[in-house]
Length: 432
Image (cartoon, rainbow, N blue to C red; front, side, top):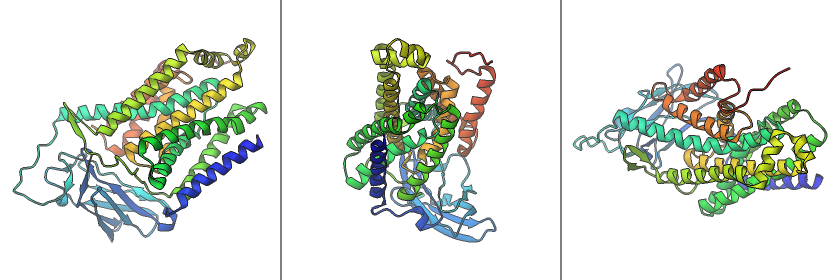
């Protein structure tokens, strides 16, 4: 066990040092407001954005570059007012939620991402040519169709991580709050091989999934398995997972930095029309990968001997052990699969919204919501819960500001659990 711990620590140190080469920490740069402007999947350049204090004193301004990115350093932590100059938007492009002014808060050492949802045009630079006809704004049907697709796409990303965490809970009973860091780990490993080393994104993603699976295996062999042998109770293990999550997340922050970065490929791919849908081809490829993996894992659980043994361990570990099943081996296999699925989720999430040190933590609550809604410990419940959460998050932006979309999903979770506490596919259990 000591050798495994030493190898795991050395590997993490090498990875983090690789990020540190040529990278500047956000702590070294100070606080900032930043973002990326896109319309229909294409970057929007030449747009002016100004920052002010709450008293109205100017802080700075920036103009979005060819990739739609902008950044304004701020003097310190606090609340600021951000104004997007709508006169500099390309013809036909508008702020879809009607809110060109925002008041974000910046924490100590944080590079805060600010979102201005744009739509109605094809992006590009702001030309200011008033003689060209403005492109027609999307219809309500087009908007609903694209919200539906966005919900499906995000659901598939959540489902990969939710399936892994549901399998781990089903076989061990552990509620692992460090699972989000496995998602981030997959994205960071992909970034390391794709941007720092220079491998193609597809190959880097495959390496990240393999490393994530190996990390799941080593993590259980060197840490969680040791705690199980010492008969550590589940509440204590859950609290340990919270501490592990915090430690690893801030390790990522220290070496990777607090800013959001993109992969070297497919980071500003324009959308293409498929009937009422406007979809970037990279998202269709990501959907196909996610669906294939989810179907393969689900089929393996139903049809293979290892899948049947996994379900037996989840139902009754003592009875499974009495029937000759190696319970520790099955649990280690589940951790390996869970680590690989989480890493794949991180890769696809990084392609979808860039890479940051807390990307896994930001969706962790949604992953738990999906697993809880579907029914803890049930693989099919995790998939169904992810679908409900993803669709509800995206569709809620039709009525409420996008900043509140996660709140609406959690509100839906509470309402559903009031009527079905065990989840959609969960089983009733007697307490006491």
